[in-house]
View 1 (spheres, helix red, strand yellow):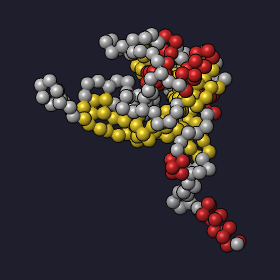
View 2 (view 1 turned 60 degrees about the vertical axis):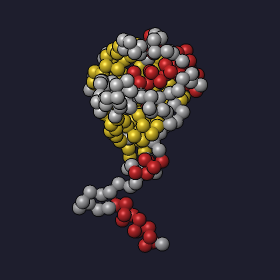
View 3 (view 1 turned 135 degrees about the vertical axis):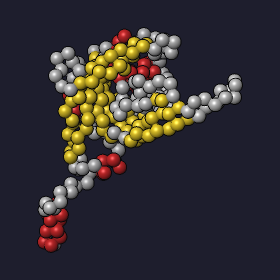
Length: 243
């Protein structure tokens, strides 16, 4: 199978799959409905257009830079009556970066790659107030989804790498296969229809894969536990004395 890799990076992201009324939550990782919505926008699809070939793509995401959860509240006035509307709370991920992948037939994946580089509509990271901060297209690989996500380069920002240890683990979540025995979670974020008159979402099983281990030469050195010798510090002192 062929896998399309995307970089989802921006100042703010919001990936809700159960938000209603005055509280708009976000998951800590991108949703399938949100990413397929981004691809549909790149194609130029309207909210009422069918999504059959997109919903059958297998989806996965790797957390390269988890970001931080932020809360905002908004006020509004009904311009017709002048009355204040209820406060609404919205949650976002700030400074997050993810590598996402969709796996499917090569003609479909190649078509998505082409429109992603010249999108018909503006692209957003889950919510209209969260435009992409980086070109999403990373490339196409002739590998299964999970292997492609494990082998993709680490896309964290330089300032974030410098704050991490020399050995980093990245969380990985993929659409579960029927025979998948790994821990899984059921989520309702497969878009059947984006039509605002009757939005509809289906269910999917999400498997938690083993973390992806990344060597980080730019990161800080590990600190020895209390009562243990600081081998790195001792080595540095020895080198200075020898000079």
